[in-house]
Structures are given as C-alpha cells and as structure tokens.
Image 1: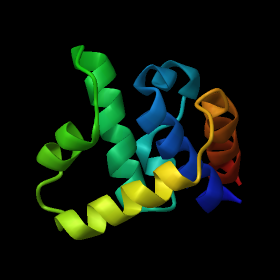
Image 2: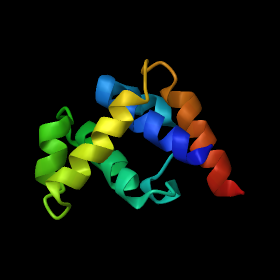
Image 3: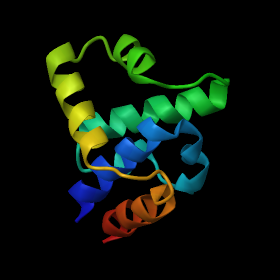
Image 4: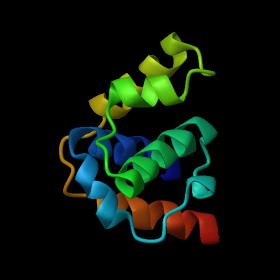
Length: 100
C-alpha cells in the first residue's frame, strides 16, 4: 500500500506541484523508496524557494541518478495518478505507514 501511495503522490505532484501544500508533515525520509523520497524533497525545495518543480528541474537537481532510471520512475508515477486532489490522502497513508 505504501509503495502505491508513494508513486501516486509523486504523480499527483507532477500534475499539480502546488499540491505539496496538502502533504502535511510528510518528510522525504518517510518514503520506503529512497528515489521517490528524493523527488519529494525536490518538490519541497521548490515550494520553499519559490520556483515550480517539473521534470526538467528534478532531473537537473538529481544529476547523480541515471536519466533513464529517473525518467522511468517518473513515468511510472505519472501513469499511476489520475488526479492531484488525493495528494493529502496519499501523504497521510505514507505517514501512517512510517509510524508503524
């Protein structure tokens, strides 16, 4: 369940980066998938520093990750999400799993 929530959350943020505001107390270290946790961190940083995160900025900021691997994971995230409206629920699921 957590893996699905993580993938879906990143997909939701890709659709609507401002949905980061719905993520509550979620932190990157709460992700079971460290790569997706790093992507989440990029969305947090973008919100904090006032720019919009997108595939280009994420790839630039994560240049140590092979582009094919990163793009494949981001494609998976985009394919798994149909709306950004559930970002808060995905975040809550990740936080709940982390607490367990």
